[in-house]
Length: 68
Image (tube, rainbow, N blue to C red; front, side, top):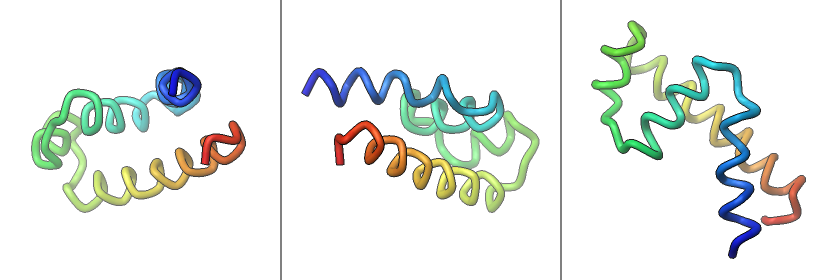
């Protein structure tokens, strides 16, 4: 729905800069974990952990928006 799409575009704006860059790189630009790791100077494990936590924030955000 349009509400969901609008919420998905708003969500990254509420994230800290590094988290936003990682999230957008992975899910908007479809970059690999390895590419993101190299670009950010973080381990692949750290990238995976950050994405896991950010997806949790996304679930909370969508629930608060009454979209889940």
